[in-house]
Image 1 (cartoon, one colour):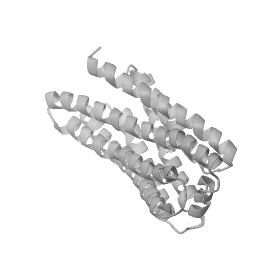
Image 2 (cartoon, one colour; image 1 turned 90 degrees about the vertical axis):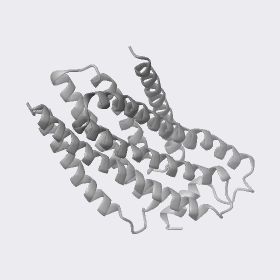
Image 3 (spheres, helix red, strand yellow; image 1 turned 180 degrees about the horizontal axis):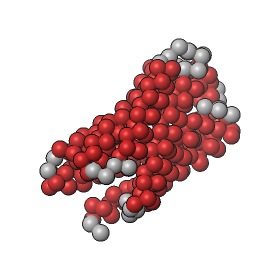
Length: 267
């Protein structure tokens, strides 16, 4: 096994560990605070964890087994992205006008289009047709990745600006800034994946082999930054926020739960 492969496996395991840890913390927080919007975020991290497992198993699968794992990968990828859409709506725009219906409608159309291309690709007997279907389906998937993640990032920045001047724990403010940045980073995977597939279809075999190794490392690294950032935002900062609210209740004018209510009320 090549050193780069070993590194990518180790990084992927770290991503999975961060996802699982964040999921457990979010579930505990949801039970404590009764914030139902966190169910969507929990669903996102559960789906993301399963996606990582499907990708790992599919790397050594062939034939029917590969096709099944590929289909499962897309189903849970779609599910994870729709969880982001509903989380963003439930958290930042529950009682406000927003782009929710537009983004949801476009995402449904794009998801159906992408999955159709996947089925065409997996049933194709021609390598040329396979690559072309692959390019189109990944283009659709990339758009589906970018739409929810960038919308969430925009909403997080909006929330950060809304509470920036409020008298509350600085860690709550930092959390929204980190969430915005990490979701932008997650969305970049869509752009890099499309570029990677363009190389697969149009570049020489030698160039594609080199670019594929670079892409795999970059993709795993972006996932690790996203996973670690969310782990830090929800677990590390969450712990600091809880301690601040317990130790100095008089100096914390607005609690984290009240921030959520502020968001839902439109500020």
